[in-house]
Image (cartoon, rainbow over the protein chains, first blue to last red):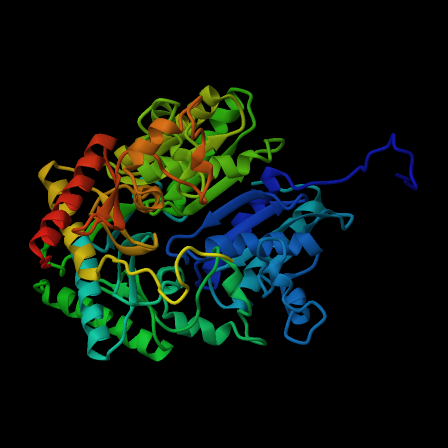
Length: 156
Length: 156
Length: 156
Length: 156
């Protein structure tokens, strides 16, 4: 195997913390309440593995799985899930990409989470209402993390 | 962390009984015979777990699984399966949602089951004929439970 | 067909709330820190569906799945996972029960969660260290809920 | 392909009816109540496909799957599940046979169901208590069918 860099040096990278994941969940849950919805909310880390999850009382049981798939899908391709869904339609360039990775969800509600320098450190996935509201709640989680990392804090 | 309610109080809720599930199965089976069809009929509880199932003589083997998935799908999102199918078409907001939850079925034949106060206590799923007939048989099960809970009794 | 009860009456029961699930997670995480471990902690509801999850920084990735399976296993049989493991050994009455339910985990770390009247309203599953420590952390979550439901309150 | 019989003649065989499956379930449920247990009870047909299922109020959620696996296992090998479990232990001739067929259950509670001439027409699987009680309840179902087929009836 060949490599452009010396094998002695690993990648220096960033990953989401438990405190950040909780901060994101709480901000998303607050938004969900503000718009009168009941959501399932998942946060995955940089490796796409579940970091934190919460289901609000009365939220759809089927969204337990969908929220996690949205978060994974957003991290797997480092873009909002809805952007992938535009490309996966019949005739589109990524037609039926949902069959990969043991099942992707490509409608809105999943968004990458980033550190201050723009590195993707995880993703949030939200499910439980219309896709517009799912996306709005996910954005509230993204915004809360963005403000926290910009300020260099992120208190729970 | 903040929470809107104290952790001391659980949710008080309802769940379907074995007697109710059997009542639903029998009413659905009677309807299936009345319209000259052979059906697989499943009932799940409030948690989406199988409560009762019956396959009529000669009914499709492939419908054993579909009836159960319809019932789960209806409970997972608290709406008739056909309503989800309208949203999951190409170009629709929930395109390919069927890839979630280890496989959803989103054509008609699954309907939530409710207590007298409207709480969803489970769901029925029917498969074995055209989707219109599947839905009609599911509705017969829903109607039988509705009459039983309204009257507070109902002999089997 | 006969039935012991009229189909008009559903079961009245209890289920865990989001606030309770968070309360359990926080108490378990505090215990995990007190004994210097890093844990994955899951809470499922009365139906065995995921309600809340947290992975502490540096906790094993493989425990994301194990914590959830422990919680489900504890709810599926309403007993601590370790009790099942004693019966599933070679020569035991439940040998290889782990092959059921898409994979059970039967070593310690999963414990049912109960309301004040003893109704099982969910379960906690903990994974990330030795099974003794996993169980101790799960017990801390159980104890926190027990105190909260006994007092009918309990601030988070 | 070669065959010892002419290809023009299919096998003449027997299969369990819906009425028989219900008769078995009801007899098993009556036995379960008589010995003060709460059971999940499944009946599969000659092809190993689910024919009928019932979960008694309060019965273990984890037994939904186990009851069905016991019934399938009993039909797959035309013998009581416990007989297979004796052979699947470490050092035994069928060690870890549970890995086959997407997961077998080989402890007691599953028994074949037969027509009057001894043809296996399905199986019953029971789960929800000790394996001795599971087996006793399964036997009650077997006995009820045996009496019905001997008498040439099997009324619901």
